[in-house]
Length: 84
Image (cartoon, rainbow, N blue to C red; front, side):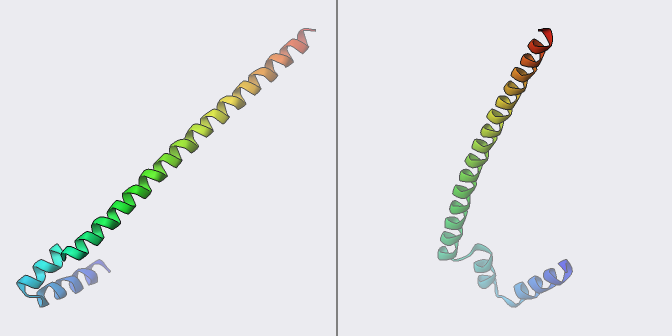
């Protein structure tokens, strides 16, 4: 599959003249602006996702700490009941 894609790309590049090839590689100002906009949108989405993941991780840590405290209290209560 990779060889086929490479062959198709090579054939396409060979069929373009130098100025077309340069435009294909560099892109038009409009296409570059669109790509920049898409990248900016993706970066914003990634930042938002990172913040959500960090918040979820903090919640998990708080929940785990609370569960450990409950377990500690139950063990302490059981120990006290055994002493009586």
